[in-house]
Length: 567
Image 1 (cartoon, rainbow, N blue to C red):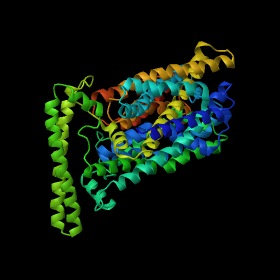
Image 2: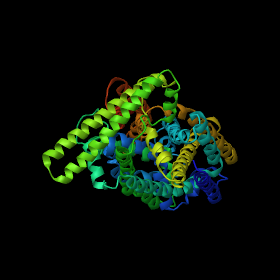
Image 3: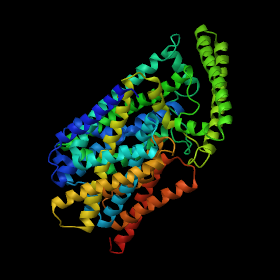
Image 4: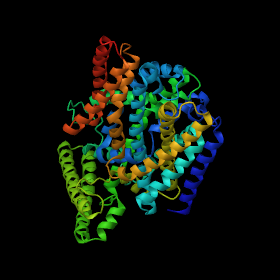
């Protein structure tokens, strides 16, 4: 990259860290460190709620998802607005007035210590893994930009962020979130402008989108009832509702955000901000991925987007076969470009039959290009060390490749800074929440009750360091799991439904007992694991399955324990 790009990245990151720590105060006590003394304004909390979810995965994974699969992913969020309204009316005032630091503290008050500990442990496992995915996204970017090994880039991101989180507290995290939201949105708009300017002079935006639509990239609503299909209207509305209720209502990384607000009303407003803005923003980022696809209709993309994998193939025994595939890919690209231009011209002519024929020719050329690329992926799967199977996926490299090869000096630095800062800020928020659950729910409750506040503050910083190391190590594995935006939601879906079910027992079903809640929670996790292992049902439905199983089993066992005089 150009020195100006490096200067932009370094300057922005320094500003985020220095200004974030400067703004932090009241971090010399545990509640101040984790909840900022419940003093933050609603708009800052609202942006932090969105930023904690909108990590570098959103820019890297969601744009790659848009490029590869189009707009269908936006259906995943259809349940979000309803979930935010439900939580703002129910859980926000409930937990805020309870005066808890973690959401799981309330489970002990309502049930017992073992239910609280189990819920907290499930959160720690799920969120610890998810943070690894969050680290892997910018590690992928920097491995391309710098040509570094992925291990080095993961460490370069994870270690400084862990150190920053240890000393900054939740106030520093929140104000960093505010900054990164503006930078992300500004960077996305800048990328969209450059994508449009990169189209041929004779191709308008409407023309380009119609060509993208011919390959299914603009399909947004799918009313299919197939439970094996992940992105449909129904899975997003119902499965997504349960996922969002579980994430924003039972995940400490989100609950902790609105517990920092000045009042119950401020906490409610912070959630409703996401209800109004999350879907449009997600649609914009997906559309950016679609526009990258359109850009590469007229500008030849690499055969594989992972440059390191291409270099490894060219240096090995499969170099000759890959060179022939690259030549075929160039020919297939030229044919697709001509077919796309022919479709645009046919449509402008107004000849319906000619337009239909041109569309068919374009679709056939797209299929041909994908067939050639599939052969390149097959070569990569056997030629690149450590891939280990035939399921090759480089969707996470699409947007970083566009940034580093197509954008002008300065704008490259802005977008890399946006991805880097988004990752640091989201990682910091997650690590702070992991530390809170570790120290408040487990260490202070079970291992060292009655110690001084200063002692717990020291342990909070040490636990932050532990989770930062754990997440950095897992990031090395997560980078090769496929679309990162899907991976992080898959990890969450194994846990969120069951956690939502136990909170449902606590708040809605007043006759539920600790025995029912504990074994219901274990049953929900077991059934989700069984469904995942034995069926092809989409992961988004795990949230519904887990919640229903926990509530049903919990109520049955609660009735039994009451009749036996226990619980």
